[in-house]
Length: 361
Image (cartoon, rainbow, N blue to C red):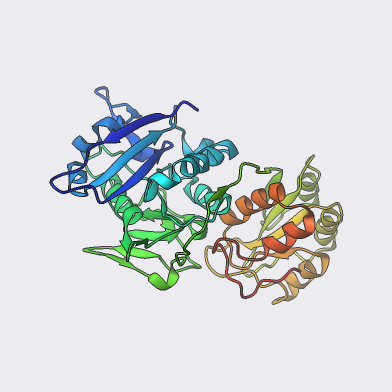
């Protein structure tokens, strides 16, 4: 791809202390109003005019922009691979990375990058905004400034947050534990099943116990193969066998994330279980996740989920739908057989789920 590269001279009076690479994919943060009042992509060469405080950071900042900014609703597998490639190719040259991304699919992208960037030991901080950077009350400036600070933060010469995360509205969350929950308020993201990694106020208060520990000498790998022959099926009262069977009959379908009620409950009608069982017998992998933002799937806790356990539906524990579907895409493309895919789906790979309560089904 023909990326646009801008190097910013942010150094004030003292010497450069660290370096960060900003990857601009698109989204509200990188938009500005033109003279007619229309939103257009922002020229990052002029970012110091919008955020003059950047000159106080003494950080060498490079911005790499996608050739054409993408609305995050259009993000696909190729964009995830491109983001990972940019980080992989520039990994040794920067202390940390900030990805500017639209909010709608940010949790999906952060989840996927946590899987395809194996051996990551530097910060990759996703951020964005609910209002454009040129808007008077924009949250873009605070989100970007703090994301840059987190991406370059070190303790004893080592990065404080060596993992993929999301910073938004004063909260730093593990990327593959996050979910967008607001479209009109600034607190757009939550992580109900995992504590925040940090909270920004007068200082940035890091929750060191929750952060992935830094490991010396890890070598970064990145994966390019992903398989999107997957589907999310959300249960609802009144769902019919015709609907469910047509989903499972999708040509090439390999995996389904099944959003069930509460702690993993589903209808107990014979037709429902038979439809699932036939799909599993055909080799379709079914992973049970909860529709609730918080809590976990515990198959067998109630009578309505015991049969799911019996027929081979996998328990997703406390994983989010965003992490579940991206993890499934990754494993289907990179594991040697379905048995390995099934085994790894129910085990933590990048901190995306808790170990307790995991069962093969």
